[in-house]
Length: 406
Image (cartoon, rainbow, N blue to C red):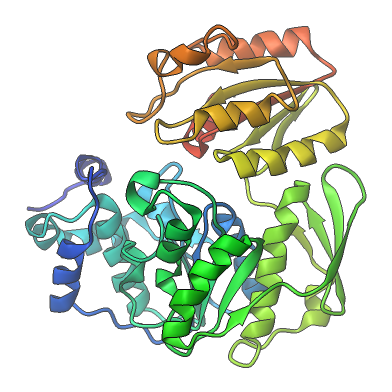
Protein backbone atom coordinates (compact mmCIF):
# COMPACT_ATOMS: atom_id res chain seq x y z
CA UNK A 1 0.00 0.00 0.00
CA UNK A 2 1.17 3.53 -0.77
CA UNK A 3 -0.37 6.69 0.68
CA UNK A 4 -0.38 9.51 -1.85
CA UNK A 5 -1.67 12.36 0.29
CA UNK A 6 -2.09 13.50 3.85
CA UNK A 7 -5.86 13.14 3.40
CA UNK A 8 -5.39 9.46 2.50
CA UNK A 9 -3.33 9.02 5.65
CA UNK A 10 -6.02 10.66 7.79
CA UNK A 11 -8.63 8.30 6.34
CA UNK A 12 -6.53 5.24 7.16
CA UNK A 13 -5.94 6.45 10.70
CA UNK A 14 -9.65 7.12 11.20
CA UNK A 15 -10.39 3.56 10.07
CA UNK A 16 -8.08 2.28 12.82
CA UNK A 17 -8.99 4.86 15.44
CA UNK A 18 -10.75 2.63 17.94
CA UNK A 19 -10.58 -0.87 19.35
CA UNK A 20 -13.40 -1.97 21.64
CA UNK A 21 -11.28 -4.17 23.92
CA UNK A 22 -7.75 -2.79 23.82
CA UNK A 23 -4.66 -4.89 24.36
CA UNK A 24 -1.11 -4.31 23.16
CA UNK A 25 -0.27 -7.83 21.97
CA UNK A 26 -0.02 -6.84 18.31
CA UNK A 27 2.12 -3.84 19.16
CA UNK A 28 4.54 -5.94 21.23
CA UNK A 29 4.89 -8.41 18.37
CA UNK A 30 5.76 -5.53 16.04
CA UNK A 31 8.29 -4.04 18.48
CA UNK A 32 9.97 -7.42 18.96
CA UNK A 33 10.72 -7.37 15.24
CA UNK A 34 11.50 -3.61 15.17
CA UNK A 35 13.10 -2.59 18.50
CA UNK A 36 13.00 1.05 19.64
CA UNK A 37 16.36 2.82 20.02
CA UNK A 38 16.56 6.21 21.77
CA UNK A 39 19.67 7.84 23.21
CA UNK A 40 18.36 10.98 25.00
CA UNK A 41 16.89 11.42 28.51
CA UNK A 42 13.16 10.61 28.63
CA UNK A 43 10.44 11.99 30.88
CA UNK A 44 7.28 9.85 30.76
CA UNK A 45 4.04 11.50 31.93
CA UNK A 46 0.67 9.99 32.82
CA UNK A 47 -2.35 11.11 34.84
CA UNK A 48 -6.10 11.57 34.68
CA UNK A 49 -5.75 15.33 34.50
CA UNK A 50 -2.75 17.58 34.00
CA UNK A 51 -0.38 15.47 31.94
CA UNK A 52 -0.67 17.74 28.89
CA UNK A 53 -0.13 20.88 30.97
CA UNK A 54 2.80 19.34 32.82
CA UNK A 55 4.45 18.46 29.51
CA UNK A 56 3.74 22.01 28.30
CA UNK A 57 5.57 23.54 31.29
CA UNK A 58 8.49 21.12 30.99
CA UNK A 59 8.75 22.04 27.33
CA UNK A 60 8.90 25.73 28.31
CA UNK A 61 11.52 25.11 31.00
CA UNK A 62 13.90 23.10 28.82
CA UNK A 63 13.45 25.30 25.78
CA UNK A 64 14.26 28.36 27.88
CA UNK A 65 17.49 26.61 28.90
CA UNK A 66 18.40 26.15 25.23
CA UNK A 67 17.77 22.41 25.00
CA UNK A 68 16.38 20.69 21.91
CA UNK A 69 13.11 19.23 23.15
CA UNK A 70 11.14 16.45 21.51
CA UNK A 71 7.51 16.11 22.60
CA UNK A 72 4.77 13.58 21.99
CA UNK A 73 1.30 14.82 22.93
CA UNK A 74 -2.19 13.43 22.57
CA UNK A 75 -4.84 13.61 21.41
CA UNK A 76 -4.39 15.57 18.19
CA UNK A 77 -6.56 18.67 17.97
CA UNK A 78 -6.54 19.46 14.28
CA UNK A 79 -3.95 17.26 12.54
CA UNK A 80 -2.30 14.02 13.57
CA UNK A 81 1.21 15.29 12.86
CA UNK A 82 0.88 17.97 15.55
CA UNK A 83 1.31 15.19 18.13
CA UNK A 84 5.01 14.94 17.22
CA UNK A 85 7.01 18.11 17.91
CA UNK A 86 10.55 19.40 18.17
CA UNK A 87 10.85 22.68 20.07
CA UNK A 88 7.05 23.04 19.76
CA UNK A 89 7.18 22.78 15.95
CA UNK A 90 5.16 19.86 14.56
CA UNK A 91 6.73 17.30 12.26
CA UNK A 92 6.51 18.27 8.60
CA UNK A 93 3.60 16.63 6.76
CA UNK A 94 5.88 15.25 4.04
CA UNK A 95 8.21 13.65 6.60
CA UNK A 96 5.21 12.28 8.50
CA UNK A 97 3.81 10.80 5.29
CA UNK A 98 7.17 9.33 4.24
CA UNK A 99 7.65 7.56 7.57
CA UNK A 100 4.16 6.10 7.37
CA UNK A 101 4.65 4.90 3.81
CA UNK A 102 7.80 3.06 4.85
CA UNK A 103 5.80 1.07 7.43
CA UNK A 104 2.13 1.14 6.43
CA UNK A 105 2.00 -2.43 5.07
CA UNK A 106 3.35 -3.87 8.31
CA UNK A 107 1.13 -1.58 10.40
CA UNK A 108 -1.90 -3.01 8.62
CA UNK A 109 -0.58 -6.57 8.72
CA UNK A 110 -0.14 -6.35 12.50
CA UNK A 111 -3.61 -4.75 12.85
CA UNK A 112 -2.27 -1.81 14.85
CA UNK A 113 -4.47 0.99 16.13
CA UNK A 114 -4.11 4.56 14.87
CA UNK A 115 -2.43 5.64 18.11
CA UNK A 116 0.01 2.74 17.94
CA UNK A 117 0.90 3.65 14.36
CA UNK A 118 1.52 7.31 15.20
CA UNK A 119 3.52 6.34 18.29
CA UNK A 120 5.80 4.07 16.26
CA UNK A 121 6.33 6.79 13.67
CA UNK A 122 7.16 9.17 16.52
CA UNK A 123 9.80 6.85 17.97
CA UNK A 124 11.27 6.27 14.51
CA UNK A 125 11.49 10.00 13.88
CA UNK A 126 13.00 10.89 17.26
CA UNK A 127 15.56 8.09 17.01
CA UNK A 128 16.80 9.63 13.75
CA UNK A 129 17.48 13.15 15.08
CA UNK A 130 19.48 14.63 17.95
CA UNK A 131 17.44 15.54 21.02
CA UNK A 132 18.50 16.72 24.46
CA UNK A 133 15.32 15.45 26.11
CA UNK A 134 12.14 13.64 25.06
CA UNK A 135 8.80 14.33 26.77
CA UNK A 136 6.28 11.50 26.36
CA UNK A 137 2.60 11.95 27.19
CA UNK A 138 0.70 8.71 27.77
CA UNK A 139 -2.40 8.23 25.64
CA UNK A 140 -4.40 6.27 28.23
CA UNK A 141 -3.43 4.61 31.49
CA UNK A 142 0.20 3.57 31.33
CA UNK A 143 0.84 -0.16 31.60
CA UNK A 144 -0.25 -1.19 28.10
CA UNK A 145 -0.21 2.26 26.53
CA UNK A 146 1.65 2.44 23.23
CA UNK A 147 4.20 4.90 24.63
CA UNK A 148 5.21 2.34 27.26
CA UNK A 149 7.20 0.19 24.84
CA UNK A 150 10.37 2.07 25.82
CA UNK A 151 12.81 0.01 27.86
CA UNK A 152 13.51 2.75 30.38
CA UNK A 153 13.02 6.43 31.20
CA UNK A 154 14.82 8.90 33.44
CA UNK A 155 11.70 10.08 35.28
CA UNK A 156 8.10 8.87 35.43
CA UNK A 157 5.45 11.41 36.41
CA UNK A 158 1.92 10.65 37.62
CA UNK A 159 0.03 13.96 37.79
CA UNK A 160 -3.33 12.79 39.18
CA UNK A 161 -5.52 9.70 39.51
CA UNK A 162 -9.32 9.70 39.41
CA UNK A 163 -11.94 7.39 37.93
CA UNK A 164 -11.64 7.40 34.13
CA UNK A 165 -11.81 4.92 31.26
CA UNK A 166 -13.09 2.35 33.76
CA UNK A 167 -13.86 -0.19 31.03
CA UNK A 168 -10.14 -0.22 30.16
CA UNK A 169 -8.21 0.70 33.30
CA UNK A 170 -10.22 -0.68 36.23
CA UNK A 171 -13.21 0.12 38.40
CA UNK A 172 -11.41 1.60 41.42
CA UNK A 173 -8.82 4.30 42.10
CA UNK A 174 -6.36 1.60 43.19
CA UNK A 175 -6.75 -0.39 39.98
CA UNK A 176 -6.37 2.70 37.81
CA UNK A 177 -3.36 3.93 39.79
CA UNK A 178 -1.68 0.55 39.44
CA UNK A 179 -2.19 0.71 35.67
CA UNK A 180 -0.71 4.21 35.51
CA UNK A 181 2.27 3.05 37.58
CA UNK A 182 3.13 0.77 34.67
CA UNK A 183 5.38 3.54 33.35
CA UNK A 184 7.73 3.23 36.38
CA UNK A 185 11.13 1.71 35.65
CA UNK A 186 13.82 -0.19 37.59
CA UNK A 187 15.93 2.01 39.85
CA UNK A 188 14.50 5.20 38.32
CA UNK A 189 12.77 8.05 40.18
CA UNK A 190 9.09 8.80 39.90
CA UNK A 191 7.19 11.93 40.84
CA UNK A 192 3.57 12.13 41.94
CA UNK A 193 1.44 15.27 41.95
CA UNK A 194 -0.43 16.71 44.91
CA UNK A 195 -3.73 15.51 43.50
CA UNK A 196 -2.75 11.83 43.84
CA UNK A 197 -4.60 10.67 46.95
CA UNK A 198 -3.51 8.13 49.55
CA UNK A 199 -5.40 5.24 47.96
CA UNK A 200 -3.67 5.84 44.64
CA UNK A 201 -0.26 6.40 46.26
CA UNK A 202 -0.52 3.06 48.04
CA UNK A 203 -1.23 1.23 44.78
CA UNK A 204 1.63 3.04 43.03
CA UNK A 205 4.00 2.25 45.91
CA UNK A 206 3.26 -1.50 45.56
CA UNK A 207 4.52 -1.39 41.99
CA UNK A 208 7.41 0.94 42.86
CA UNK A 209 8.68 -1.42 45.57
CA UNK A 210 9.01 -4.25 43.06
CA UNK A 211 11.15 -1.98 40.87
CA UNK A 212 13.12 -0.26 43.63
CA UNK A 213 11.88 3.05 42.18
CA UNK A 214 12.27 6.10 44.40
CA UNK A 215 9.21 8.27 45.10
CA UNK A 216 9.38 12.07 44.90
CA UNK A 217 6.64 14.49 45.94
CA UNK A 218 6.04 18.24 45.79
CA UNK A 219 7.74 20.06 48.68
CA UNK A 220 6.37 23.10 50.51
CA UNK A 221 5.35 26.18 48.51
CA UNK A 222 3.21 29.32 48.65
CA UNK A 223 0.71 30.42 46.01
CA UNK A 224 -0.83 33.90 45.73
CA UNK A 225 -3.65 35.11 43.46
CA UNK A 226 -3.10 38.57 42.02
CA UNK A 227 -6.37 38.26 40.09
CA UNK A 228 -8.36 35.49 38.37
CA UNK A 229 -5.63 34.82 35.79
CA UNK A 230 -2.37 36.10 37.32
CA UNK A 231 -0.66 34.22 40.13
CA UNK A 232 2.64 34.04 42.00
CA UNK A 233 4.26 30.78 43.04
CA UNK A 234 7.17 30.46 45.47
CA UNK A 235 8.94 27.09 45.29
CA UNK A 236 12.34 25.71 46.28
CA UNK A 237 13.79 29.15 46.99
CA UNK A 238 12.55 30.85 43.81
CA UNK A 239 9.46 32.87 42.86
CA UNK A 240 7.63 32.34 39.56
CA UNK A 241 4.92 34.20 37.68
CA UNK A 242 2.06 32.15 36.31
CA UNK A 243 -0.61 33.33 33.86
CA UNK A 244 -3.67 31.09 33.62
CA UNK A 245 -6.38 29.43 35.73
CA UNK A 246 -5.63 28.98 39.40
CA UNK A 247 -5.88 25.19 39.15
CA UNK A 248 -2.99 25.07 36.68
CA UNK A 249 -0.28 25.89 39.19
CA UNK A 250 -0.35 22.27 40.45
CA UNK A 251 1.03 21.14 37.10
CA UNK A 252 3.63 23.90 37.03
CA UNK A 253 4.82 22.68 40.45
CA UNK A 254 5.23 19.17 39.03
CA UNK A 255 7.31 20.49 36.13
CA UNK A 256 9.49 22.59 38.45
CA UNK A 257 10.11 19.66 40.80
CA UNK A 258 10.89 17.41 37.83
CA UNK A 259 13.52 19.89 36.67
CA UNK A 260 15.09 19.77 40.16
CA UNK A 261 15.12 15.95 40.17
CA UNK A 262 16.90 15.80 36.80
CA UNK A 263 19.20 18.80 37.22
CA UNK A 264 22.31 16.61 37.23
CA UNK A 265 21.63 15.31 33.71
CA UNK A 266 19.74 18.38 32.46
CA UNK A 267 21.24 21.42 34.25
CA UNK A 268 18.87 24.34 34.92
CA UNK A 269 19.62 28.02 35.63
CA UNK A 270 16.85 28.61 38.19
CA UNK A 271 17.73 32.31 38.51
CA UNK A 272 17.00 32.75 34.81
CA UNK A 273 13.92 30.54 35.04
CA UNK A 274 12.43 32.67 37.82
CA UNK A 275 12.36 35.74 35.54
CA UNK A 276 10.05 33.94 33.11
CA UNK A 277 6.23 34.09 33.12
CA UNK A 278 4.64 30.69 32.60
CA UNK A 279 1.49 30.79 30.47
CA UNK A 280 -1.14 28.06 30.69
CA UNK A 281 -1.85 25.70 27.83
CA UNK A 282 -4.69 26.59 25.46
CA UNK A 283 -8.12 25.15 26.32
CA UNK A 284 -7.37 25.61 30.03
CA UNK A 285 -9.74 28.40 31.05
CA UNK A 286 -8.86 30.09 27.79
CA UNK A 287 -10.41 33.53 27.36
CA UNK A 288 -11.45 33.93 23.71
CA UNK A 289 -13.66 37.03 24.08
CA UNK A 290 -13.76 39.67 26.78
CA UNK A 291 -17.11 41.43 26.19
CA UNK A 292 -18.87 39.34 27.25
CA UNK A 293 -16.27 37.08 28.83
CA UNK A 294 -16.24 33.79 26.89
CA UNK A 295 -14.11 31.05 28.42
CA UNK A 296 -13.22 27.66 26.91
CA UNK A 297 -12.09 24.85 29.18
CA UNK A 298 -11.71 21.14 28.49
CA UNK A 299 -12.67 19.96 31.99
CA UNK A 300 -14.11 16.47 31.47
CA UNK A 301 -13.74 14.79 34.87
CA UNK A 302 -15.51 15.78 38.13
CA UNK A 303 -12.20 16.64 39.81
CA UNK A 304 -11.20 18.85 36.88
CA UNK A 305 -14.56 20.66 37.03
CA UNK A 306 -14.16 21.20 40.78
CA UNK A 307 -10.79 22.86 40.14
CA UNK A 308 -12.27 24.91 37.31
CA UNK A 309 -15.08 26.09 39.59
CA UNK A 310 -12.56 27.42 42.09
CA UNK A 311 -10.80 29.38 39.36
CA UNK A 312 -14.00 30.70 37.76
CA UNK A 313 -15.18 31.94 41.17
CA UNK A 314 -12.30 34.44 41.23
CA UNK A 315 -14.05 36.43 38.45
CA UNK A 316 -17.06 36.95 40.77
CA UNK A 317 -19.60 36.99 37.91
CA UNK A 318 -22.68 34.89 37.00
CA UNK A 319 -21.86 31.91 34.77
CA UNK A 320 -23.83 30.43 31.84
CA UNK A 321 -22.63 27.03 30.60
CA UNK A 322 -22.68 25.24 27.24
CA UNK A 323 -21.62 21.63 27.80
CA UNK A 324 -20.91 18.48 25.78
CA UNK A 325 -18.89 15.36 26.50
CA UNK A 326 -18.08 11.88 25.21
CA UNK A 327 -20.05 8.76 26.08
CA UNK A 328 -17.49 7.38 28.55
CA UNK A 329 -17.53 10.40 30.89
CA UNK A 330 -19.25 10.45 34.29
CA UNK A 331 -22.15 12.70 33.30
CA UNK A 332 -24.06 12.74 36.63
CA UNK A 333 -21.01 13.88 38.61
CA UNK A 334 -19.94 16.35 35.93
CA UNK A 335 -23.34 18.07 35.94
CA UNK A 336 -23.44 17.98 39.73
CA UNK A 337 -20.14 19.87 39.84
CA UNK A 338 -21.16 22.38 37.14
CA UNK A 339 -24.39 23.11 39.03
CA UNK A 340 -22.32 24.42 41.91
CA UNK A 341 -21.45 27.49 39.83
CA UNK A 342 -24.49 27.71 37.53
CA UNK A 343 -28.00 26.31 37.04
CA UNK A 344 -28.06 27.81 33.55
CA UNK A 345 -26.61 24.83 31.69
CA UNK A 346 -27.41 23.91 28.09
CA UNK A 347 -26.45 20.43 26.87
CA UNK A 348 -25.32 19.95 23.30
CA UNK A 349 -23.43 17.61 20.97
CA UNK A 350 -20.68 17.87 18.36
CA UNK A 351 -19.16 16.08 15.38
CA UNK A 352 -17.58 13.02 17.00
CA UNK A 353 -18.74 9.41 16.82
CA UNK A 354 -18.37 9.07 20.61
CA UNK A 355 -20.09 12.36 21.50
CA UNK A 356 -23.29 12.15 23.54
CA UNK A 357 -26.43 12.99 21.56
CA UNK A 358 -29.85 14.07 22.78
CA UNK A 359 -30.88 10.48 23.53
CA UNK A 360 -27.81 9.99 25.74
CA UNK A 361 -28.95 12.93 27.88
CA UNK A 362 -32.58 11.80 28.23
CA UNK A 363 -32.40 11.32 32.02
CA UNK A 364 -31.36 14.95 32.46
CA UNK A 365 -33.54 16.80 29.94
CA UNK A 366 -36.11 17.83 32.55
CA UNK A 367 -33.42 19.81 34.35
CA UNK A 368 -31.20 20.89 31.47
CA UNK A 369 -32.30 21.92 27.97
CA UNK A 370 -30.65 20.34 24.93
CA UNK A 371 -29.78 22.00 21.63
CA UNK A 372 -27.70 20.69 18.73
CA UNK A 373 -26.99 24.26 17.62
CA UNK A 374 -24.48 25.37 20.23
CA UNK A 375 -23.41 28.36 18.12
CA UNK A 376 -26.92 29.83 18.46
CA UNK A 377 -26.91 29.13 22.20
CA UNK A 378 -23.62 30.97 22.64
CA UNK A 379 -24.96 33.84 20.55
CA UNK A 380 -28.12 34.02 22.69
CA UNK A 381 -26.07 34.00 25.88
CA UNK A 382 -23.91 36.82 24.50
CA UNK A 383 -26.95 38.95 23.72
CA UNK A 384 -28.76 38.28 26.99
CA UNK A 385 -25.82 38.36 29.41
CA UNK A 386 -23.24 40.88 28.15
CA UNK A 387 -21.73 41.39 31.62
CA UNK A 388 -21.55 37.74 32.65
CA UNK A 389 -19.36 34.72 31.90
CA UNK A 390 -20.16 32.25 29.13
CA UNK A 391 -18.35 29.00 29.85
CA UNK A 392 -18.00 26.39 27.09
CA UNK A 393 -16.76 23.15 28.61
CA UNK A 394 -16.64 19.36 28.46
CA UNK A 395 -14.64 17.27 26.03
CA UNK A 396 -11.45 18.81 24.64
CA UNK A 397 -12.59 17.63 21.19
CA UNK A 398 -15.75 19.69 21.71
CA UNK A 399 -13.68 22.71 22.71
CA UNK A 400 -11.59 22.37 19.55
CA UNK A 401 -14.71 22.32 17.37
CA UNK A 402 -16.11 25.40 19.12
CA UNK A 403 -12.81 27.26 18.74
CA UNK A 404 -13.01 26.86 14.97
CA UNK A 405 -16.57 28.19 14.83
CA UNK A 406 -16.33 31.18 17.17
